[in-house]
Amino acid sequence: MALQSLDITARSATTTPSPSVRGTLQVAKLIDISKCIGCKACQTACMEWNDLRDEVGHNHGVYDNPRDLTDQSWTVMRFSEVEVEQGRLEWLIRKDGCMHCAEPGCLKACPSPGAIVQYANGIVDFHEENCIGCGYCITGCPFNIPRISKKDHKAYKCTLCSDRVAVGMEPACVKTCPTGAIVFGSKEDMIHHAEGRIEDLKERGYGNAALYDPPGVGGTHVMYVLQHGDQPELYAGLPKDPHISPLVGLWKGVTKPLMSLGIGLAVFAGFFHYVTAGPKEVDAHDEEKSS
Amino acid sequence: MSRLIQRYTTGERNTHWVVAIAFVLAALSGLALFHPAFFFLTHLFGGGPWTRILHPFIGVLMSLFFIAMAMRFWRLNHITPADRQWMGRIKDVLCNRDENLPELGKYNAGQKILFWTMVVTMPLLLLTGIAIWQPWFAPYVPVWLMRVAVVIHALSAWILILGIIVHVYAAIWVKGTVRAMTRGTVTEAWARHHHRAWYRETTGK
Ligand code: HEM
Ligand code: SF4
Ligand code: SF4
Image 1 (cartoon, rainbow over the protein chains, first blue to last red):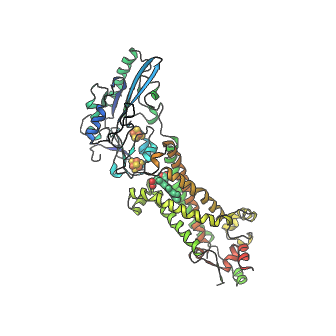
Image 2 (tube, protein in one colour):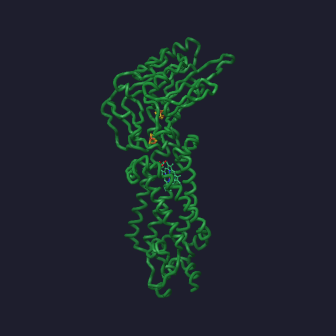
Image 3 (cartoon, rainbow over the protein chains, first blue to last red):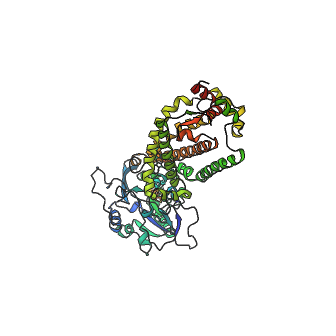
């Protein structure tokens, strides 16, 4: 996942600016849930391109397989049976995986320099060679995406096929999708494409169809077209208004530089107190009295 | 030099130093992950992953020995009226105007406050540390709880580190103190000057 010709514009645990002179095209993947038939070709393509093989799991009586994201399954189809309108069953199938947030909570939380990076094109990537396996990225992510491997104790997630994108190809899942439910291009084009789809859906009776590009995390580089845009929770608990948790903000915000300063000041206060007031010593009177 | 009196037994001294060494290692390895400015400290522990692996074990070791120490010193750390008086005259303490201070037992209010700070922060560090401990416990802890735990862990660590800085400075500042923990003894003059009630009790003078 390293060795990219892409510029890194943000880097975990780094307090000085990363290279940000060159402007690149912002990319995005658009997943149109109304077109998805749940065939899981994208899941397979992801395994194939990234050389991942998850364990053959168990049948849990639902279509979701595997049950959850893992270090080997960077994307999972989540099936929800809902009745938005009484008596009208709908099967909503959401391709879950990293959203590639413009303001990534994982990157903010990570304590290891360069374990998480964000490229100028918007892709958020984990560089496992720098990962220490602390799990802070899990704490930081509003979408519950990163998974720590039991094999090497490093964090893994969807790379948005940064290695393919770097050489001008679309992500593997996009290439394989038989219905064209996943498309990839510049973020601008994808928003434009989504607008057309939403108009179409509205005409077909989905009055609340909308684009999911949550502003709470600065927008995302993986976006959804939702038939029920007013209720994202219907789609296997997609958060309505995702934010980096205020606790993570508190933990990683100005508090830490201030606390570090406090520790430094305490040491200096001691030093200068010694120089000013001098040591506390036993006086001659005590020596006399106790001898 | 005046005669010596025993302040700490061999067992007490060894326990103290296990806690102290483990604390320094836990603080250095914890700070490494606390802010990027301290990340270089991971080199002391063999790199990032080793720092992450070792820190919790060091912390648990420290906690266990601290429990032994706390039980031993618990009784001696109840706050008394003389302690309140001493705190009221903290300015005199800092400016070495010791003649204005009340007679104290084995510990002064500053030492007692540090003791209770440790009694509160150590269990907090242990519990929150276990909650965020990869790969053993954290996978079974809900994400919201990990968020709470990591904030409390960082905050308690900070309070404890500040407390220990004061503690170490006080030992250097008050001459004749360090030997209490290295040799186990202090001079009678030291005891009479700083902890007169304890001095009378032990020597009968
Ligand atoms: C009592 C047992 C303790 C346990 C089980 C524990 C466990 C942990 C764990 C699991 C982490 C996350 C990183 C890692 O996996 O290494 C951590 C971070 C940390 N620990 Fe501890 N720890 C303990 C005691 C302490 C002590 C005594 C201190 C220092 C006084 C301390 C200071 C820190 C700091 C500063 C961090 C970084 C927090 C942050 O990133 O904001 N810990 N600890
Ligand atoms: S587990 Fe790895 S990627 Fe995640 S926060 Fe820790 S060092 Fe960063
Ligand atoms: S979805 Fe989670 S893992 Fe992906 S970029 Fe956003 S915060 Fe990071």
